Image (cartoon, rainbow, N blue to C red; front, side, top):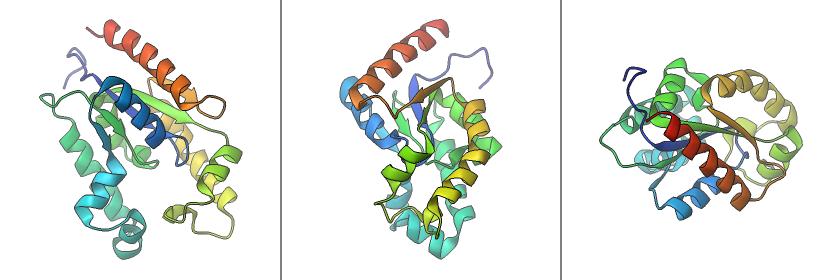
Length: 183
Protein backbone atom coordinates (compact mmCIF):
# COMPACT_ATOMS: atom_id res chain seq x y z
CA UNK A 1 0.00 0.00 0.00
CA UNK A 2 1.40 3.41 -0.82
CA UNK A 3 0.90 6.45 1.38
CA UNK A 4 -1.69 8.04 -0.92
CA UNK A 5 -4.15 5.18 -0.40
CA UNK A 6 -6.76 5.37 2.33
CA UNK A 7 -5.71 3.24 5.31
CA UNK A 8 -8.07 0.48 6.42
CA UNK A 9 -10.42 1.65 9.15
CA UNK A 10 -9.18 -0.79 11.77
CA UNK A 11 -8.34 0.28 15.29
CA UNK A 12 -5.09 -1.39 16.36
CA UNK A 13 -4.11 -1.54 20.03
CA UNK A 14 -0.44 -1.81 20.92
CA UNK A 15 1.33 -1.54 24.26
CA UNK A 16 3.13 -3.46 26.95
CA UNK A 17 1.57 -6.47 28.64
CA UNK A 18 -0.88 -5.33 31.30
CA UNK A 19 -1.58 -2.01 29.58
CA UNK A 20 -5.22 -2.91 28.88
CA UNK A 21 -5.20 -3.98 25.22
CA UNK A 22 -7.52 -6.96 25.66
CA UNK A 23 -9.92 -5.14 27.99
CA UNK A 24 -10.13 -2.00 25.86
CA UNK A 25 -10.37 -4.15 22.73
CA UNK A 26 -13.46 -5.91 24.13
CA UNK A 27 -15.05 -2.56 25.02
CA UNK A 28 -14.42 -1.16 21.52
CA UNK A 29 -15.81 -4.38 20.02
CA UNK A 30 -19.00 -4.00 22.08
CA UNK A 31 -19.43 -0.37 21.08
CA UNK A 32 -18.68 -0.69 17.37
CA UNK A 33 -19.66 -4.27 16.66
CA UNK A 34 -16.42 -4.72 14.70
CA UNK A 35 -14.88 -8.19 15.00
CA UNK A 36 -12.19 -8.34 17.67
CA UNK A 37 -8.92 -10.00 16.68
CA UNK A 38 -6.82 -10.74 19.76
CA UNK A 39 -3.56 -11.75 18.10
CA UNK A 40 -2.28 -13.72 21.10
CA UNK A 41 -5.49 -15.77 21.21
CA UNK A 42 -5.39 -16.44 17.45
CA UNK A 43 -1.78 -17.64 17.70
CA UNK A 44 -2.62 -19.88 20.68
CA UNK A 45 -5.56 -21.40 18.81
CA UNK A 46 -3.52 -22.06 15.69
CA UNK A 47 -0.59 -23.51 17.64
CA UNK A 48 -2.85 -25.56 19.90
CA UNK A 49 -0.97 -24.35 22.98
CA UNK A 50 -0.44 -21.32 25.19
CA UNK A 51 2.06 -18.60 24.43
CA UNK A 52 4.07 -19.78 27.44
CA UNK A 53 4.21 -23.25 25.90
CA UNK A 54 5.22 -21.82 22.51
CA UNK A 55 8.06 -19.91 24.20
CA UNK A 56 9.12 -23.02 26.14
CA UNK A 57 8.85 -25.50 23.24
CA UNK A 58 9.85 -23.40 20.23
CA UNK A 59 11.37 -20.19 21.57
CA UNK A 60 10.50 -16.51 21.39
CA UNK A 61 11.76 -16.19 17.79
CA UNK A 62 9.20 -18.75 16.59
CA UNK A 63 6.43 -16.88 18.40
CA UNK A 64 7.57 -13.59 16.79
CA UNK A 65 7.49 -15.28 13.36
CA UNK A 66 3.89 -16.33 14.07
CA UNK A 67 3.02 -12.71 14.94
CA UNK A 68 4.55 -11.39 11.72
CA UNK A 69 2.73 -14.01 9.64
CA UNK A 70 -0.59 -13.12 11.28
CA UNK A 71 -0.05 -9.39 10.72
CA UNK A 72 0.62 -10.16 7.06
CA UNK A 73 -2.75 -11.89 6.86
CA UNK A 74 -4.55 -9.05 8.63
CA UNK A 75 -3.33 -6.45 6.12
CA UNK A 76 -6.06 -7.41 3.68
CA UNK A 77 -7.79 -4.37 2.20
CA UNK A 78 -10.89 -6.47 1.47
CA UNK A 79 -11.30 -7.53 5.12
CA UNK A 80 -14.02 -5.97 7.27
CA UNK A 81 -13.15 -3.26 9.78
CA UNK A 82 -11.77 -4.78 12.96
CA UNK A 83 -10.43 -4.08 16.41
CA UNK A 84 -6.97 -5.66 16.59
CA UNK A 85 -5.32 -6.29 19.95
CA UNK A 86 -1.62 -7.12 19.58
CA UNK A 87 0.94 -8.79 21.79
CA UNK A 88 3.21 -6.49 23.77
CA UNK A 89 6.37 -7.33 21.82
CA UNK A 90 4.92 -7.11 18.32
CA UNK A 91 6.71 -3.79 17.73
CA UNK A 92 10.13 -5.42 18.07
CA UNK A 93 10.39 -6.11 14.35
CA UNK A 94 10.56 -3.25 11.86
CA UNK A 95 8.42 -5.26 9.43
CA UNK A 96 5.71 -5.51 12.09
CA UNK A 97 5.78 -1.77 12.81
CA UNK A 98 5.23 -1.08 9.11
CA UNK A 99 2.41 -3.61 8.91
CA UNK A 100 0.73 -2.18 12.01
CA UNK A 101 0.63 1.33 10.56
CA UNK A 102 -0.91 -0.04 7.35
CA UNK A 103 -3.63 -1.79 9.34
CA UNK A 104 -5.29 1.47 10.39
CA UNK A 105 -5.33 3.71 13.45
CA UNK A 106 -2.67 2.55 15.91
CA UNK A 107 -3.29 3.36 19.58
CA UNK A 108 -0.50 2.87 22.14
CA UNK A 109 -2.01 1.98 25.50
CA UNK A 110 0.57 2.96 28.08
CA UNK A 111 0.75 2.42 31.85
CA UNK A 112 3.42 3.19 34.45
CA UNK A 113 5.70 0.41 35.72
CA UNK A 114 3.85 0.07 39.06
CA UNK A 115 0.50 -0.38 37.30
CA UNK A 116 1.93 -2.93 34.85
CA UNK A 117 3.54 -4.86 37.71
CA UNK A 118 0.26 -4.91 39.63
CA UNK A 119 -1.78 -5.99 36.60
CA UNK A 120 0.64 -8.74 35.55
CA UNK A 121 1.68 -10.09 38.97
CA UNK A 122 -1.12 -12.65 39.23
CA UNK A 123 -0.83 -14.00 35.69
CA UNK A 124 1.58 -16.92 35.34
CA UNK A 125 1.06 -17.07 31.56
CA UNK A 126 3.55 -14.30 30.86
CA UNK A 127 6.78 -16.09 29.91
CA UNK A 128 8.90 -12.94 29.73
CA UNK A 129 8.17 -12.27 33.42
CA UNK A 130 9.25 -15.69 34.70
CA UNK A 131 12.19 -14.17 36.55
CA UNK A 132 13.30 -13.41 40.11
CA UNK A 133 12.86 -9.67 39.50
CA UNK A 134 9.84 -9.00 37.27
CA UNK A 135 10.05 -5.23 37.89
CA UNK A 136 13.60 -5.07 36.54
CA UNK A 137 12.58 -7.21 33.56
CA UNK A 138 9.61 -4.92 32.82
CA UNK A 139 11.87 -1.84 33.06
CA UNK A 140 14.40 -3.38 30.66
CA UNK A 141 11.72 -4.36 28.14
CA UNK A 142 10.04 -0.95 28.38
CA UNK A 143 13.36 0.80 27.73
CA UNK A 144 13.63 -1.07 24.43
CA UNK A 145 9.96 -0.96 23.44
CA UNK A 146 8.85 2.58 24.33
CA UNK A 147 10.60 4.22 21.36
CA UNK A 148 9.16 1.51 19.09
CA UNK A 149 5.63 2.04 20.40
CA UNK A 150 6.09 5.81 19.91
CA UNK A 151 7.35 5.30 16.34
CA UNK A 152 4.36 3.11 15.46
CA UNK A 153 1.42 4.77 17.22
CA UNK A 154 -0.83 7.52 15.96
CA UNK A 155 -2.11 8.09 19.52
CA UNK A 156 -0.68 7.44 23.00
CA UNK A 157 -3.11 6.94 25.90
CA UNK A 158 -2.24 6.46 29.58
CA UNK A 159 -4.59 3.74 30.84
CA UNK A 160 -3.73 4.02 34.53
CA UNK A 161 -6.22 6.72 35.53
CA UNK A 162 -9.23 5.97 33.33
CA UNK A 163 -11.80 3.20 33.26
CA UNK A 164 -12.43 1.09 30.20
CA UNK A 165 -15.44 3.13 29.07
CA UNK A 166 -13.56 6.42 29.27
CA UNK A 167 -10.65 4.94 27.33
CA UNK A 168 -12.94 3.61 24.61
CA UNK A 169 -14.74 6.95 24.28
CA UNK A 170 -11.46 8.85 23.88
CA UNK A 171 -10.08 6.35 21.38
CA UNK A 172 -13.25 6.44 19.28
CA UNK A 173 -13.29 10.24 19.15
CA UNK A 174 -9.63 10.33 18.13
CA UNK A 175 -10.16 7.56 15.55
CA UNK A 176 -13.07 9.45 13.97
CA UNK A 177 -10.87 12.52 13.60
CA UNK A 178 -7.99 10.42 12.20
CA UNK A 179 -10.14 8.60 9.62
CA UNK A 180 -11.90 11.81 8.56
CA UNK A 181 -8.52 13.39 7.86
CA UNK A 182 -7.46 10.39 5.76
CA UNK A 183 -10.44 10.21 3.40
